[in-house]
Amino acid sequence: MYPNLIQHIRKYVELDENDVLVLIKYIKLVSLKKKEFLLKEGQVCRSLYFVEKGCLRMFFINDKTVEQITQFALDNWWMSDYFSFMDNKPSDYYIQTVEKSEVLTIDVFSFEELLKELPQMERYFRIIMQRALAASQLKVKYMYELTKEEFYMHFCTSFPEFIQRIPQYMIASYLGLTPEYVSELRKKNF
Image (spheres, one colour):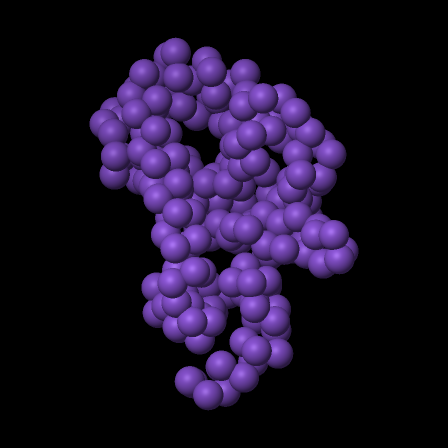
């Protein structure tokens, strides 16, 4: 049950079969269609989401009423609005499926109980959060350091699975580029 999550956790911490049974009681599986929302702006984010299979995106609507994508999550990735989740405050973000998805959820109460019952999960989540923060910092650095074309090419070579599964206009939004510019780059480089 939940092979991707169990395998992912075991990359970072020990988890025996009894631990797996404990973990499973705190997790819920949600099957979602394409374009379904897990979170909308103004709602409190009450869960952490692990993509067992599929793809999610996180975005906000900017002052020009344009969607600005801040994050994607493919198979074996976590996503949440951590500020809203931690502080129980309304979110500024939307979380939506990009494709049909199987998502594992852990709500706030279950998360705290899980950490009490399986202390090694605190280490696991610390490692996951550190990796997410490091990736976010690197993205910001590349946005300032690389040309738009270099930034796009770096993304394509670093995350080829995104290029295959995510619509071009969404990739453009994530990279802070226009869809037309991304189209030009694709024609030029592929």
